[in-house]
Length: 95
Image 1 (spheres, one colour):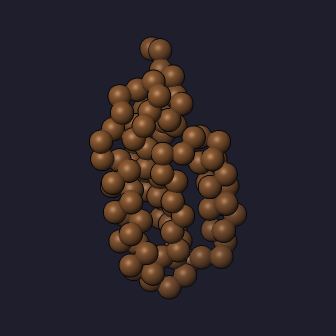
Image 2 (image 1 turned 180 degrees about the vertical axis):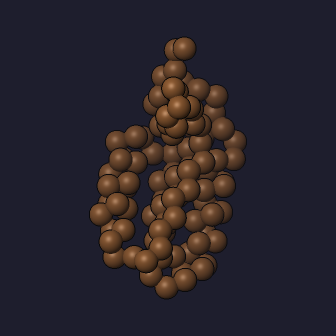
């Protein structure tokens, strides 16, 4: 695919939640498949939220240079009062 970019995030090793077994494998498999299709792929695998924020900022900055963009997240997520939240490795959920 010409002129396409993707960001894949995979988080297994949560500090305060149940660790996941396959999120990293899923994100890696998606990233590999997209690269085979010609996407420029940015990856964030089991990184702390500060590092993921940097990768997301870089991805957003580069979007204007591409005709197609894809975002893929594998990890824990929540919905709170109708808002969807993707959980970073350090998230601490008490209620």
